[in-house]
Image (cartoon, rainbow, N blue to C red; front, side, top):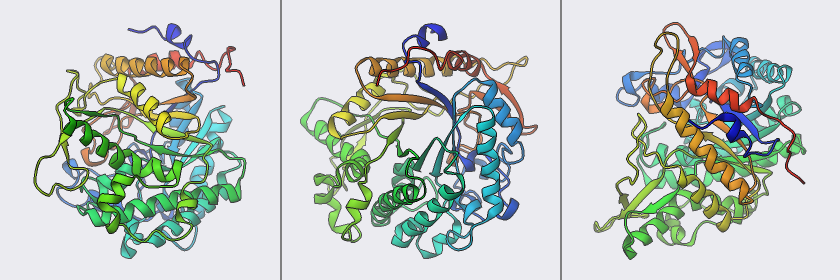
Length: 457
């Protein structure tokens, strides 16, 4: 086991160690204080969409246990907490009146963090689109981007004076491709044309959100959280290498290109551009406003081979087998070097601002035995990925912080409650929280910071 003090010595003293959650996954209280349904409330209640028809009605009951959970975060010794704000609590119908009671909850959350000396990293959108917006097409409709802009402005006006950083979106890859092309996440579409509309209007919403944040609070660091994919060809054959290049453009380039270069990848436009919605004058300038930081969520590599089928749709790939033998309980390959390869590649391809690893962690489903949870594989996973991160810093990459996913076990989207990512165990019957072995180790590491050897400049 990597000693936390030894690992700590590899990081600058102002490196930020934090924990992360998302509103729909932990809050519960789905009908409290004026909140109205999100697309995930509806999706969860449709048979066959979420494991066991689990839903977010109670989740970790974080909404009602806020003070207790803030004390838990403080007990872990971390410097920062990354959380998301539920759009359906703030503007319950997506457009129209702002719900003051919803803002009151986040007031208490942010004030509670400040009182405990913990930085507040807020995400404006972590997939819980107000259900009412689906009547207008949801993310496939341009007007949703403007609804997001108004919501972003309302949140920033109320909370922006006390936030340390804000992200517009979490993992647009998921809310675009996983939700509109692969049908795995809400709203469960399986249609390339719908996905292409969602892609551009999500990118546009990001840019409009950046403008909204800066109009209210110019000094608030604003960024975007992307689950970039570390993509490897299944073999060294020219066909598989070409497939990996197409996959990179499709899974990464369609977000990084517009945001950091003001353009969609050429290969993507050549294949699918004629099916995109109209890109109006000014759209790309809006999308590509400079960011103060970006967040990387990384869990597992993507390995692809060429899809030889006639008429295979871009990017025309099929999954290639994993290389590493280790798997997490959700079946994902464990391969820490991919994190380093990914950061190097992205920085080579795009002019990127400083980076926070905004999510990294592992699903292991150990339970409580004798009052403890021995999740050594999760501890090893986090330690190995932090070691890669320390190596990137030594190479000169501007890595500024790391947020363990997640603070506690929670609603794992289509997997329901059967998959556990927390460094704190949650008993969903009693809502008792138990810090796991990985949580105690992470607290020991975080407790070393901040310390004296701060980064110069």
